Length: 192
Image (cartoon, rainbow, N blue to C red; front, side):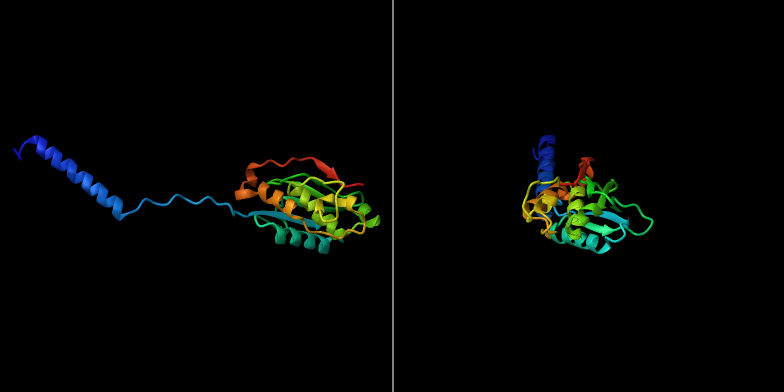
């Protein structure tokens, strides 16, 4: 009776079940891959046509880099492509509304007309870069809001995004997803 085909088949099935169960206990299932929520999006800027604004651009970039964790602004090497083109102009400051994507294109114009009227150059640079990162104006607004721009008055020197502005930029670039979010593309002019 133990030699019957049914007992042999049952024995083989039991052996396979035992081997599978033993293997599953010996080698645990691999853990699911963790989602990357801290991916850093690197955006390059070119300020080679923004003569007279170098220190203010550097300070504006440093402000964003110190206050937003998932976006890193770096100066493009000469002759390489940059997502953010920064130029000095004689008019009012203006910029392309982002969020600019890696490989995309945004333009920031740092207008001297605002400086002539008494507005702070570092605040202007940081504010216009904020547009490229996807932030619209919040006019009128207090000096504590970087994106309130000229509506905060000429005495305002704040070049640091507030917590809400930081959060909006981090949300726009969350998980390195900025390449999937198209830039708005509108040009925002920061005249009073």
